[in-house]
Amino acid sequence: MTLTTTAVDNAVPRVATSAPVSRVARTRLIFWGLVALGCSAYVARGVLRLRDLSIWAEDGREFLAGAHNLGIESFAVPYAGYLHTLPRLVAFVLSPAPLVAAPALYAAAAIGIYLALIGQVLAPRMAWLIPSAVMRSATFALLCLLPHMDEVYGNICNLVTVAGVGLFLMVMSGDPQSQIGRIAEVPGAFVLSLGGAIGPFFAPFFFYRWWRNSRSVQSLCVAVSASVASMIQAAVFLNSTRSTSQSGLLRVFAKATIERVGGGWLYGRANVFLDTHHGWAQLNSAIWLLAAFIVTSLLLGKTAMVVWTLFAFVMAGVAVGYGSDLFLGTAVLQRQLVIPTVIILVLLMASLAVLDDHRRWARAVAVGCLAVGIGTVGAGFLVPGYEVIPDMDGLDECVKSGAAECKTPIAPTGWEITLQQ
Image (cartoon, rainbow, N blue to C red; front, side):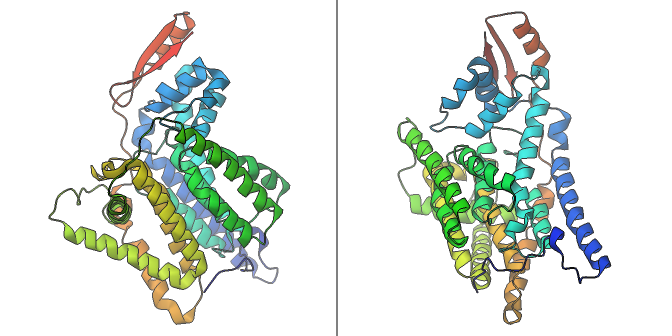
């Protein structure tokens, strides 16, 4: 069964006038209740990190320092082989604020941007995939509880990963209905595609969106915008000195998909794959992935095939970029699990919305695939705090004194901010 753009939209603002008022009110209450619950839960996950605010790694050394030392020129500076337009934009916009406020502002910006980008799933233009507004709000809440957020949460350097989540949901969306939305979406696709190395992997799929959305002018403009940004990003990478993994890519791809993505949903932070005595964990993870693939393919048809192809593109990029480093432990390279996990979870939630009496068993399996991650979600709910609290007051005083160079240590240990005047 293939979903089409003619699917009925049960969006909250467009309830049929014949529906009982009590049902309309109940639907609204559930919708906004789940949204509020998701947002509250996501903020609550960072209580340890937000209690003792810090500056994380590239947030200070590259982006805060770049905005201070270079200003707008920092946007043209590659780091790790590619451009980081989204985190640099955040750092540039916040650069006029006092330095002492940077830890709080960076954390708030990172949290707000993640919630805003996953908020795309709430919009009526996602109704072709998830017709029920309540189901879309449940999907939003689920993405607020995503495992693997220790590395990504509350910092702007890992917005390069969050940008990929935004690109995926943009690919899966219909065209915006408002004029403001249509105008904002084009530069939004450009900024997100330049936001990290993942952008080029999404570019071809924006043309799938264009085809799916009846070859609309809006979707074509978005596809062109994303493609131009992706070509810029690819050119920067090809002219960089960054190396990629060259051996055993198929093995790395398969092992990372099973152990890091499937295993991440089933076992979270538990390092059950670091020795050879846990073949059962590999088997369970492989079964979970296979079950998710089968039920989403049966219920969503060609749509699932396209999205699983996108999943393969993303995982191929991860395998090429990081190779065997992906298997050093569950705390390593967590950010690379966020996008593929979001892809699978959105597919499973979309499968639950397919009303096919002959395939109720498939929806039951999809529910099971989601339910087996409840323990992981609970165990990984709180993200740990940072071990180094920077002396932003001292840094601010140093800058105000007119010193040629001012420094302060930041998290993790061994990193520092260096500001020049």
